[in-house]
Image (tube, rainbow, N blue to C red; front, side, top):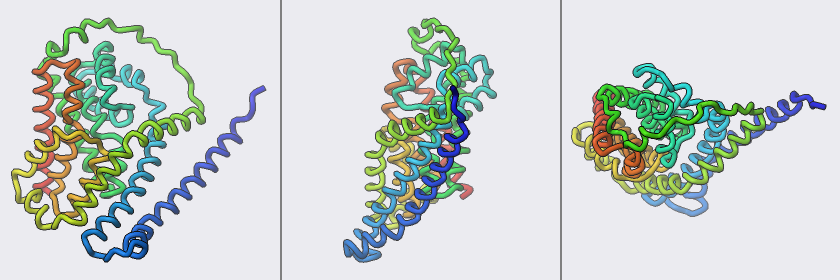
Amino acid sequence: MTGNPKPNRLKIATLGVIGLVLWYVLYKQLLPFSHYFAYDLVGLEQGSHLGDAVQFFVYDTPKVMMLLTLIVFVVGMVRSFFTPEKTRKLLAGKRESTGNVMAAGLGIVTPFCSCSAVPLFIGFVQAGVPLGVTLSFLIAAPMVNEVALVLLYGLLGWKVAGLYLLTGLGVAISAGWVIGRLNMESSIEDWVREIRAGDPSQLTVKLTGADRIQHGKEAVRDIVTKVWPYVVAGIGVGAAIHGYVPEDFMASIMGKDAWWSVPAAVVVGIPMYSNAAGIVPIVEALLGKGAALGTVLAFMMSVIALSLPEMVILRKVLKPKLIAVFIGVVGSGILLTGFLFNLII
């Protein structure tokens, strides 16, 4: 005998609303608590270097973790509709241009980490996805993901988050299109091209609402538990910048007038190993101290999209010539983005 699913759905919806209300109430208390902790409980002087740094850290750490947990849970449920297998099927046989746009868009909602870059690349090649389309996906997935967007929104507002989304997608689409036009399929490692495609038929499992909630919980467990050290480290660096770095000093080396700041930010960002969770709090502090938006976004994009560990992993499937072209094309797109934003904003 099958029970009526409506009461369960109503219960889940009610618990969800209650949880959101409690989350919001707690979230609104973070700022006054940080002031109370730093200036009343600890007794630091308001406006002092140490006082401002401690207040920044105590406020931003739980704020970022709460935002991260909520959005990862929601996106984890959304991602249950977009498995890597479904993504591969959607992109298989798509021509460039249309395929580049679709790949970059799917990169936002498809589960991705550095360790999955190689199997995803192989799967796309097996399915007949063009090289440029595949690279559009591999650029967008780590750079324009829910962690980056929610942290930018929570710390810097929807305008900066929206600009980052549009420019990140633009870099992913254009870089993939350019590389696709270069006809560099021969620069894929031979063993990858020789792999026979497996059976494309996949067993489709229909997920219930409870299953999708479980996906959300698993996403929180898998992602938040991995990135929280980066969050704390990034906020710690941001707190030090916020409390101790003079505003005129940061403006002089990362401001609009320093034309060399954009390429320098990209060069510095590439060898760094971090992710959005660790870099966004630093971005917030840099902007607060007078750094130009274009320079800071170029730095963030280079850290996430062109990190040295990511290139080492992709070397397993791409020959050095294609790796060099990949870095050059994506880096050029990031430089253009940085200069453009510094010019118009």
